[in-house]
Length: 201
Image (cartoon, rainbow, N blue to C red; front, side):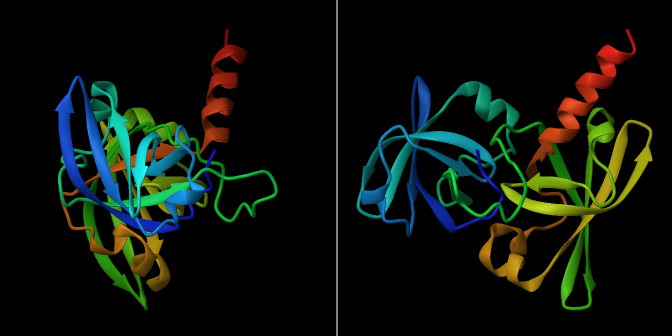
């Protein structure tokens, strides 16, 4: 489990294709405190540490994960939002995040809003029931609050506000129109939808 509060920005140092894809990520984490087999969220994707050395750790990315995450995410030089798995007693500063990507969104626009920026996204309509104004959403591993939601047939548009701090400590400050990002819906919304499905039977 994670909270969507990013604690480091890592950089992909190398990508090796042998069966699954092996990715080496440079980090400022003290890797001596990271166990092999530990989970780290990498731009919203929960991955398992399979090797480590000073200043870096390795993960294995399956073909299924690559197919379900943002295009070009697993490329050398790509910056990733990192979060270590939460421990019992940790402060839950964001919301409950599982590290399982539900879909891909595309940046539709970026507008200044005071000192913040309002970012617009488009997602497939299938995700629309899970996105609500003032609800929580995870974008590339960052816990954010939804501002607006508008349905347009096969596509749903929503927006979030990024304060200067979030822009500075995550990769979201460098988003550009047309860029693809990983989306995880609020886990509570997912279960409520499932309950409604069975209630209607």
